[in-house]
Length: 281
Figure 1 (cartoon, rainbow, N blue to C red):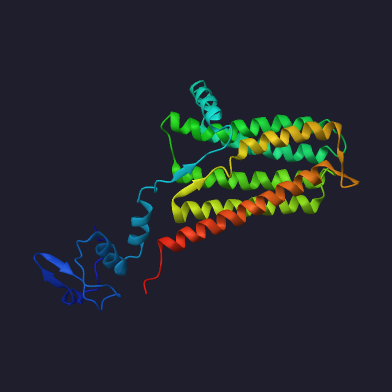
Figure 2 (cartoon, rainbow, N blue to C red; figure 1 turned 180 degrees about the vertical axis):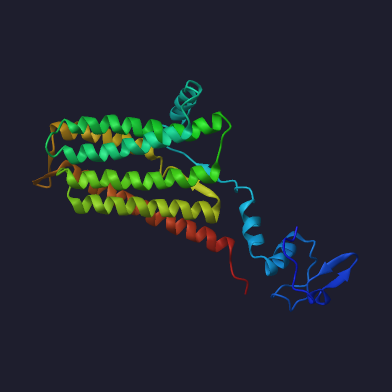
C-alpha cells in the first residue's frame, strides 16, 4: 500500500506490536495508532509520499446526496422526462443535451438583446427556453435511465453551465431595453448567491435543494415565457400612479423574493449546522 517508505534508519522509531507497526506520538503529530488502521496508514505513507493522501481522497465514492425537488410541476415533469429518455435515440448522449441547454440559454440572451430592435425576438426567447428545459432537464434523467451516471462530473459541469447560461440570459435582458440594466445585474447576483448557498448546503448537509418554496427552474421558465407573451403586447404597466416597464416591476418582485429565500435558507442551514456541531463546554 505504501508507495514510499520512511527514510532509512527511521524504522527504529516504529513499535512492533503483534506483527503490526505503530507510529509514535511524536511522529508527524499523529497519535499512537496501528499503521494497519486505514487512516493511520495513509497518514504514515503521506510522510514519504504526499500523493498517497490525494489518491486516497480521489478514489473515495461520491457521497450520497439527498435531492430536494418539491416544485409544483415536479411529478408531471418527472413522468414526461422518463418518457422522453426512453425514446431518445442511442446516438444522443447526455453531453449533447447539456450542450443544447447551454446553447439555448445563450440563444435566449441573444434574442433578448435583439428584441430592442425587433419585438418578435421575444417569441424566439420562448423557443429557446423550451430547448433549454429539454437539454438541462433531460441530461440527468437520460444518464440515470441508461445507468451512465457520472455524479461528480455531472454536478460540476451542470452547475457551471447554469452559471454561464444565467450570465448570458441576464446580460441579454440588460441590453434589451425592456429591463433596467441594474435590475438585471441584481437578479444575476441574487441567482449566483442562491446557487452558492445550495452548493454549500450540499457539501455541509448532504442536501441539494432544486426548488425553494415549490418554485424550481421549470416554474421560473414558465413564468418567464408567460411574461414574454405579455411583454410582447404590453411592455409597460400602470402601477402606483405611474407607468413602469413590465419587466422592471416583475424583476423587482423576483429580486425581493430571491432575497427573502436566500436569507431564510441561509439562517435555517446555519442553525442546523450549529446544533449539529455544538462546542462542548
